[in-house]
Every structure is written in C-alpha cells, then in structure tokens.
Length: 374
Image (cartoon, rainbow, N blue to C red; front, side, top):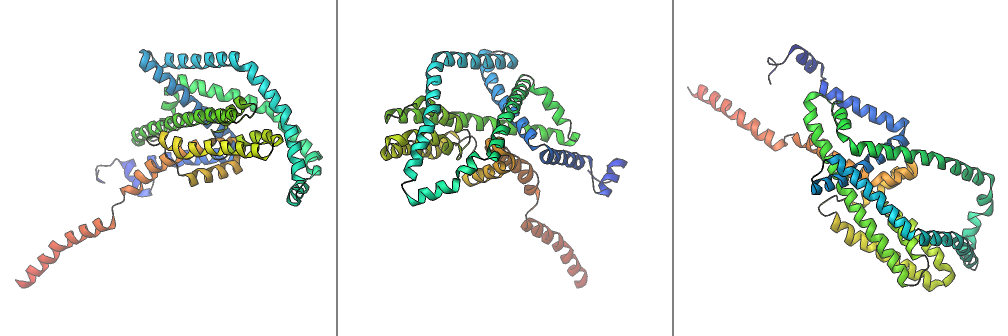
C-alpha cells in the first residue's frame, strides 16, 4: 500500500512512528510484565490452571472424536472417567497405600537417626552435623517458619480449589476466553495471533502427553525395582517417584531421598542397591523414554531446562519450579514463531541487498557511458 492509498489517520500514525498494531503489542507486553512483577505467584497459578485446562480439553476432544459427541460432552465424560478411576483405585489400594504411608512416616525418623549415628563415626560426618546444628533446627526461627508453613497450607488449599475452577471453565468453554484474548490485538494482527495461540496450545498438549508417559514409566519401574530388591513400601515409593517426575532433574532427586533413608538401617549394600535403582530408572527415562516420546513432540535442551528451573525456583519457589519446564517449552515456541519467524527472518540478507543495488546501478552507469561516447 502506497502513501497515497493510506487513510489520513494511517498517514499520521506512520509519520509519528507508531501504529495500532505496535501499540496493542506494547500494551499487552507492559501488562504482562506488570503482573509478573506485582503478582508473580498469581500469574503462575493461572498458568497452572490453564495447563490443566489444556489437559482436560485434549482428553475430552479425543473422547468426543471417537464417540461422535460434542466436545463439551467429551470433556464431561473425560472428567467422569478420571473421577471413577480415582475412586476405584482409591477403594482398591487405599488401605495398602495408607498403611505404607503410615509405615513410611514412622520409619523415616528412625532411618534419619541411624544415618546420624553412622555419620558421627567419621570426622567429615561430625563436621556436617555440627554445621547443621541443633540450634538451627529447634530454634524459634525454625518454629516460626514451621508455623507459617502450617498456616499457609490453608492458602495452598484455597489456591488449589481456584486452580481447579480455572481448569474446568477453560476446558468446558475455551472459545469465550480465546475470543476475548484475541480482541486485545489490533484487527490486522488477529489472524496471526489466532495461529500463534493454536500453536501454543498444541505445544502444551504435546508436552503434557510426553510428560504423562514419562511419569508413568518412572513410577512403574521405580516401584518394581524397589520391590525386586526387597525394599519395603515399594508401592508408595514408586507413586512418589512418578508424581515427582513432573519436575525434571530435580524431582528424581527428591523422590530418591525417602527410599535411601529407608535403606540405611539395612546397611551400605541396601543403600547402594536403592541408589542403583533410582539412577537406572532416571538414566532410562532421560536417555531412552523421554527422547522417544518427545521426538515428534517437544524437544527441550537440558541446559535450558535446568537453567529455567533454577531461575523460576529461586524467584517463585515451588510453583515456579513445577511450572518452569512447560513455561520453557511455551517460551521456545513463542520465540521461534513470533520473534525469529515473524521478525528476524523477515530481514533480507545483506548479500541480496547488495546484489539488488548493483543491478539497479548498472543500467544507469551504462547509460552515462553511452551519452559520453555519443
């Protein structure tokens, strides 16, 4: 479109160096930064609810496609299937799991005491225990922190309820929120914004499916391995390992702690065997399972994942640590699509500009030469 074809207000905007599309993007970016600075925990909780909504919606759409139903009924059936599955699993395994959790809770203090007595036999162990210090453990500051943690448990429960409501509303009626979000962009940007939103949802769906497969494999193999070497509470330890596998790299380390503590009373050989089980499962998950399930889905560089976990964990705590990986996957997709694809790649290479400039100057030069010769 030439300058003469522009409407007067468009020419004014172009002359002033700004336009409605650029203003809409600037406003959205400023609002996002403001919310992240003022309410980072709230933003992460909303993102967690949206992630759960994507999971519910994807499962519901899959059911609806195979049963020839409307998506809303597919989501309802998917949620009902989840509730029934949890109820049946709880009814069948709750007594055993409850007993094992009680036994785990009872044995961990004894295992920790046994570990302390073993550490006291070595100089380096006594130094570690001295640095930990009983005063730090039983001080008033620690008690205040424990009281604060207990009080905040009710806050976490309330946040969980809100998260579930966000997920349910987003799963049953995503179109309403999608249309509202697209309207925040200038009309010229809305088609591209819709495409980017579709790609973002597809990225999160791919990451969720790969993550669920990896979590299931980790839980099953860990529980089976601990059961084969005779470690008690293998069922609950496998369940813990599968759930904590949601947090890559950090989760497996946290999951191994109770298993190692329970193996301490049985001696060094038991500890080494438990450690071998966790390391073997983690190696298999990291180098075989995850690469296979993510080969056609979402591939994340390990260094980038670890760095994002350190940053989000330091800034936002546990919720930041849990959401670091899906946020990284989403951020990589947005950077590749919006910044690299829609901005950087539109710049013409310097070689093409030089070639075009040379082509434009050659006729003029030859014309001057012809006039001089005449």
